[in-house]
Each structure stands twice: as structure tokens, then as C-alpha cells.
Image 1: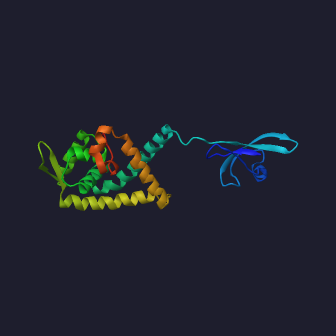
Image 2 (image 1 turned 90 degrees about the vertical axis):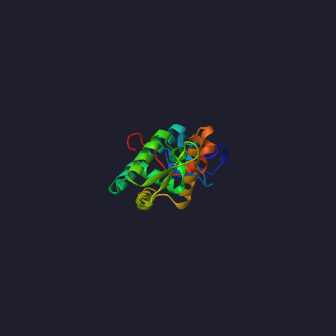
Length: 219
């Protein structure tokens, strides 16, 4: 019996007897003797008992499905991190900004906005709040640019927040192997880079893959 291999859609000759016995008259996803995964569907009865057909799964998840899953994961991760950061008097966007300044001392507001994935206006509001708390300080740069650097108090708080976020993410990522985590990181970097307008990619540089969450309501 020629069966259709799910991974590549190519028909291959495979001994169907073991699959027939395992599938019975039901539709089941089963591993074939060649190591491929097949969806077995009962087709008809006949002199040889019955035949088994294989449905090929040619396409991966749709872009819409990935978008929905990313959004769901983002919201649930944000809720978990916000709850953990609240006792420190921090929000996730504020911690993301402190982390950005630690990674890029003397960055302009525009560079920090690219770093954290926010608009210049939103990033400016977060920076202003942190400066009011004495966690960041500013100094004039070239032209009208304002550069930002973390204070000792801000650095200490950033380290405490990092421990908290690491604990949350360790729990959330507990079901992934190290290999899966590396693959996830590579995929997220790719998506983040592709989402940037071409005019902004050169400016973003290494910032495009670093931490930061946009918040429309809580700077």
C-alpha cells in the first residue's frame, strides 16, 4: 500500500499491516515504520479486510494562529511578571526600561524606545517616571539629544527585579528543554526584527532583540 507521508507529502511504500491493527476503524495519528507520523483513516472493507489511507499535513500553523498564541503568551507572561514585580513598586515596562539603560548606558530616549519596542512618547513617559524616583539620571548629548544613565539606586533595584523576573520565567519555561529555549529565542528575535520597518532596522541594531514591553496605560 502506498501511503502519504505527513512531513513532505510524498507517497512512500510502507507496510500498513501494523498500522491497520493499531488504527482499527478509527482515524488516528500513528508513527509509521519509517519513523514518519501518519494520520490513518479507515476507508473501506474488502477482500483484504480494509485499506488505510494517509492524510498529509502539508502546512504548519497559520500566521493568524501564531499571532493569537504570541498575544496570549505575552498577556499571561505580563500578568505573572507584573504580579511578581508589584511588591518592589515596579511595573514590567519600568523594569524593561531600567534593563535597557543597563544594557546601553548613555542611550538617547529614541534609542531606548527602539530597545524596548515602544514609541518615543511612551518611552519618554517611562523614563520621566524613573527619573522622578531617582532611578535614572539624564545629561545632554549631541544636539537636542538627552542621554540616560542608571543611578546606584536604580542599578540595585534592577538587579532585584531581574531575580524576580528570572524566577517567573523559569517557571513559565519549565516545560521547554534548553534546545527548545534556544530555538524559541531565535524565533522571537527573527519575528521582532521582521516586524521593524526597514528604516528602523539599522538604528535598532542589537537593541531589537532585547527586553521591553509596551504599556499604553501604565508608564
